[in-house]
Each structure stands twice: as structure tokens, then as C-alpha cells.
Amino acid sequence: MRRRRPVRRARRQRGRLLRRRRAGGAHDRGSGDVLSAPPRGVLAALCITVTISYGTLYYGFAVLAPTITADTGWSLTAITAAFSLGLLMTGLVGVVVGRSIQSRGPRGAMVVGAVVGAAGLALVASAPSYPWFVAAMLLCGAGAAGLFYAPAFAALTHWYGAGRVRALTTLTLVAGFASTVFAPLTTAIAEQTSWRTTYVVFAVLLLVVAVPVHWVALRHPWPAVAGGADVTPDREVIRSPAFVLSAAGATLTTLAMFAALVALIPLLVGRGMTPILAAWALGLGGAGQVLGRLAFPRLTDVTDVRQRVLWGTIAMALTTLALALVPGPALLLIGVSIVAGAARGLYTLVGATLVTDLWGPERYAAINGVLGAPVSVATALGPFAGAGIAAVTGSYPETFAVLAGLAAVGSLLSVQAVRRAPRPSVVAGR
Image (cartoon, rainbow, N blue to C red):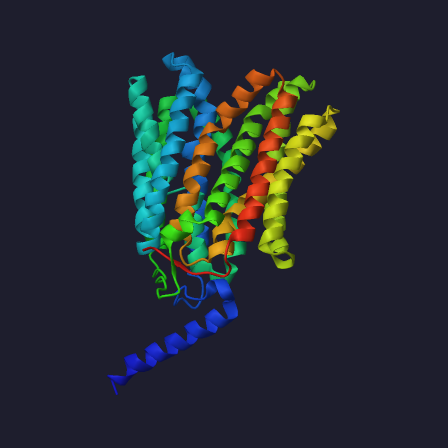
């Protein structure tokens, strides 16, 4: 009887898995996930750690950059370039992190990411020279590859199954307040101490919170990846026209989005707003992202992937164009900024679910890691692109018109990618 129990247990487990696959839809087939329900504590843990990661590794720099320049004598352009190089490193390391998560789960990658990120912040705090500062920012970027949205999205996509959309929405809603929390916190610490001490505090915070939380909360079994003759290797997916078009479309749209964010305040000031009012418009646009993210779960219930990609990307182009064309008054411009923020919030979740929608969740971490590399490049180059276009055109309204054109091309490419992607499909890392 003792020998038969493991056999019966295995049969019951396979039966539960088959029922889950039938209920989960085409994209859940072959996932190999034997968990009967999402593991407890994962979503709450990632909401905490992702918020802290963005606050310490991203938004902290935005607040402290002028202070760093004033204290060190390094130009704002130079330290911004170092920060952008760190974002490029995030994209490059993200490919490796994605493959690691795919094969072994997110626990190790996210624990290591927290350790490396904390070490990078500590080195930023102690940087005696600009080359040291650049090296520290590169280390921060490498750590961020295991801490930002991409690895967290991979964990939620695999563990939460059919409930992944709501889990992803919750994460982006909570982590979207990272700037709201860390901008004043960074300012308060820096005013009482210094920018170097602030980075030390951030290093300690990341180390003592993210490392143990990831170690404890992400300990759950990782779903096995299905194999077989009908499984498409990762390399074929990455070389496919659908993937190339997806990467090109996401890169152009992201470039336009981040360039527009940086150029928004100069645009609004040129429209007659005070710098303080323009900053409020930018902040309210950030709050508008909540509206777009709240709408996304409902959108998935009434649309297919082609419609979601079309609406999510074209909203980016149209709101950017509206900012180029609307001269005022200030209240109307603030309203447009809020709508543009909602478009960004919607697009974030369209991008978070794109790999699952087109190729299934089974290989999300590995494929999304590759897709994220050019997107990270666009994120890093966005501020420079906006400034460069403004220098050429001599006008911020014309800059936004150019950015709207880039977003429109990105929308066209993304829609074409959906049309050319075979669905449903299962892919494998071979």
C-alpha cells in the first residue's frame, strides 16, 4: 500500500493539471504548472520590492542629479549619460536574467539583483571620481535587471495563470506610486544629510528589505516547461518576423514615450505655464496612469490582442499629437496630460502581456528578456532623443509632432506583429 500512494498522488496531480489546462485556455496548455492556486505572498512581496527598487535605483537619481552636479562639478549631461548607460546595462543583463528565471525561477535572480543593486548604490555614494561613478551606475543597472518590472512580470505570469492580468495590474498600480513616495523621501533625507548619505540609506534599504523578502516569498516551486516535437525553439521565435516587428514597434513607442515625458515641462512652460504648474501637470499625468491600468482588466474581457495592441499604441500617438497641437488654456493642457498618462498606464500593461498573448506564457521570462533589451535602449535614449529633436526643430510643439509620428509608426509595426504571430503556440528554450 505504501508503494501505491505515490502513484495515486501523481495521478491525482496529473488530473488536477489537466483540469487546469482545460479551464485556462489555449495559452495555458503545456505550462507544466502543478500549482493548484497562486502561491501566497508573492504579489504582496513584489509590490513592496519593485516599489523600493524603482524608488532607490531610478527616481532617486532624478531628484538628486542637480545636487550631485553642484557638489562634484560633474556636468548634468555627464551624470545623466552615466545613468543612461546603467539603463542600457539593465537591458543587456535582462536577457541573461530572463533565461535564468525561465530555467530556475525568479528567486535566485531577484535575490542576486538586490545584492548587486545595493552594492551599486553604495559605490555611487562613495564615488571619488567620475569614472568610478560611471562604474557604479553600470552596477546599479545590472542589479535593476533582477528587480524592475520584467522579472516580477515573469514571476506573476507563470505563478498566477489565468489570474495574471489582475496580478500584473495590481503590481503596476502599487509600484506606480514609487515616484510619489520616493521623490519627497529622497528630498527630505538629502536636505538633512547629503546626496551620498541618501544613497547609503537606499543601499541599506534595498539590502535589508529586498534580499530577505525575495528569499522567503519566492521559494515556491517553479513550473516546468513543456517540450515536444510541436514546440517552437526560443531562437526561432526571436528570429520570426512577428517578434522583430514587436521589438521594433515597442522600441519606437517607448522612445517616443520617454522623450515626451522629459520634454513635457519645457513644452508647457513655452505654452505659458509657470514651472510649478507645469510640474503639477506632469505629476497629474503620472496619476493618470492609474486610470489606464485600472481599465486594462476590463479591456481584456471585451477585446482580443489585436484590438488591445492597436488601442494601447495608437493612444500613445494621439495623446502625444494632442500635446503638440493644443495651445491652451492651462486647464485643458493639464487634462491632456492626464489622458496621456492614462495612455502610458494602458500601454505598460499591453506590453506586459504581449509575449503571453502572442506566444503563450510558457517561455515568458526568456522571450520577454530579449524583447526588453531594445526597449531598455529606447528608455535610456529617450531623454537625449527629445532634447536632440528639439535642438533640430527649434520648437517643442514640433518635437511632440515628430514624437507622435514615431509612436504612430511603432503602432503600425506592433499591429503588423500581431497579425503575423501564430496563435496559440508553445515555445521552448533550445
